[in-house]
Length: 511
Image (cartoon, rainbow, N blue to C red; front, top):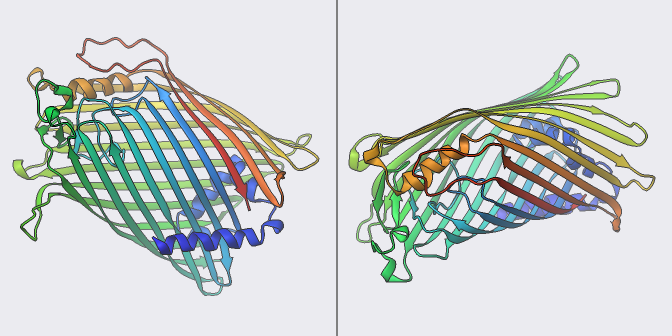
């Protein structure tokens, strides 16, 4: 952890030293196409060394507020996040570095049926209870890329490092405390062939998560007088066992990656292919034994491909960004001596943007976007199955203005709609339990609902707010609203409401 913090400090202060010479930092992070082109520089040393950016950085303070009843059952009614973030690139002789660091604190209200340390849609084996409660979370993220030019302008070697630490605490019985740690290394070798950069690397890492659960008031422990406070261990998607036994989750990560950056004809390209296997062993701690007791394993296999293309025709920049992800997971539940939980997830994301430069000191960008998702999960022991798919088309525009004092103002708006393609939940009447009513049925109602989406953004950046630094203030909001009334005969204890708001305010310094 100290090494990662030191790396980020080196990047940060080396960028500050040349701050007076940099005039493009805010442009890189604020213009949508430039921001999209900056993303590949984080993929690996291949894209990092293909870029002409030598020194750039930003430091930001973020406040995020989320509230609404149109949500999933395992999502908090209200969430507040305060965060510090920084990232940047620095070049020192033959070394080129990219680094990032963030710290965030999260407060969540009215979160039920999930006591996960890391909130995701994939991981089984976690505690749940029907009683909604308050959560506090802290998360540290840090890492980056270290690259060395072994043969001048020909051969590069380096590695990526990604570190995360997360703690989560629930303050309502049944209470939980979860701490999660993960570190991943991704060594890579990259070769430059004229206008083409190609690289290959592997991924290796490990992590662990300690999960503790218990009661402050013993009257609630396992009492049928308070059924919503009974603590269950969820082995998959509905297979429950009354439990307050602490356990440890041990993870290993292995994979391969291919990276490319270069030019074909008049197109500039950046692409990557990743293959990652995540394995976890869930173990009860045995105090008088050197070996812990494994009660379940889970393996997640992921394929990811990304491609970004840019082409300039006169005063117009065309950009296409595509991302595809396929995720497959299955477990082995020791007590059943068989596979119990399976999932598959397919995600596609395609964006086209058109940027027209300088019309009366203003620039205009418009874009269209399409998101497709297909998700399936099944718990064999509980006989619970949920499947859904949807299409999310969006259209938007951003206008940028610069005045005579070089202040930058940008405003943007986008409209979208989430259109369900298919949604199905299957639970036999004899298998219905509290998870069915509290999670499976509400999730089906949520994903089977049509929704409209409105996004607004405004940013003001100036070099006059803080001497010698470009300073930006931004406001972004996303409003999601259900477009039709939910009708169902399901015995659901939670019905998704009408709307959900996500609001973000940020103050950034650009170097």
